[in-house]
Length: 454
Ligand code: NAD
Image 1 (cartoon, helix red, strand yellow):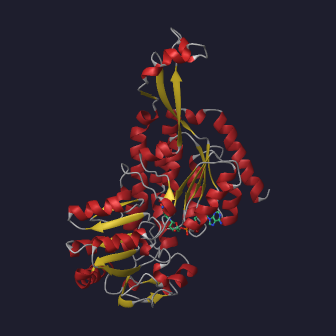
Image 2: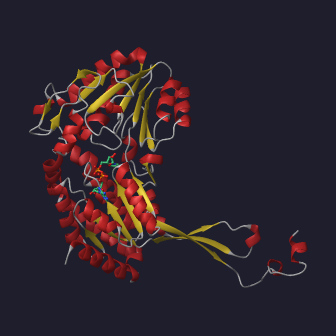
């Protein structure tokens, strides 16, 4: 059987299984999620090891940004699922007196989840948890660029679930295309804006609904009143975690010109305290995913003035946490999402100028603003459209199940995490239950119907 045929066989088996209504039972979903949690706990060390092999993630980083987040999502969903899944009664309009209005959440059916390589574990498993909680069957397509994690995802899925319920299909763009060409009921894609367009175009042929979790250049504004040492630590954390290969990493810094020098000094201190004097020999510093990405990133190193870092190891695909000063919007490093440990610094004189510059570009996935001035906070939050973000922090908005996580415009559409995941993967079916005890005649065509209504 070739790849296309075996994919078609998995999809039709999942369609048949879904039609048996087994996955609609909330108890069944809870059993499956609980089983998944048991398997994940039992295989936790293998997950850590696979992340180390593919991206040199340290155990601490693997736990905080991947494994721990998945556990949290699982526990939160298991705890609340029964309540979310209950049909909800809503108010009924006066014109509908006697009837009852209900909203039922129902699974879409067969869900396809396509995952990227940068958080290869969390970004495949977290949407899967949402899809199963909502009662769907699912196919996961992990990234071909992180082969150890992808193989482990397949092994864990095979150990936990029947293939007609959940399957993992490994492979690159061709396999992804073949999956996209199947009749799916929902597509959840995480990856680049470029591939997001392809996904949406293909999905449109069958009018399949999509969530697109995409990327882009996320700005980070450091205002003149910001506590600079604290801001620098939180920015260095957001920028250099996973060697900058984070969709919501602060892509570039817009710092008020008055505090630029002091901010850079604090940023250097933070980098050294996190990764040491020589990050290239730090065993816990993340590596760049592939040679191609390494080449692209090192091509930016001559942009502006190098203020920190800049050393690389081609052999081990490492690039030091780097700070580039005197950057202008026209430089190559400002033309695309960096997705690596390079931090370009631009300055502004007044906050309006910074907002204008951001608004002249596609809507970012994240925005970070460092200031204690509430007028400046209100102004920026009400003037810039972005997926989500933080005031006086970076990344942390995505680590809570209470906030919906997603992009807007070119950074994506739809959102997930916690209850938002449950709703993303559920169709809300509105039903009006009418009474038969009486009937209003005036709604029917009649000579004097309009006169009664008026
Ligand atoms: P990518 O778009 O290259 O690949 C993502 C997935 O799509 C992979 O599984 C890949 O096999 C598949 N794919 C690649 N080409 C395809 C094609 N032509 N047709 C169909 N499928 C195809 O992205 P990536 O390099 O893995 O990840 C990096 C990008 O993802 C960055 O832009 C980053 O910002 C974004 N990202 C976004 C989020 C988010 O939550 N919004 C999270 C992580 C990464």
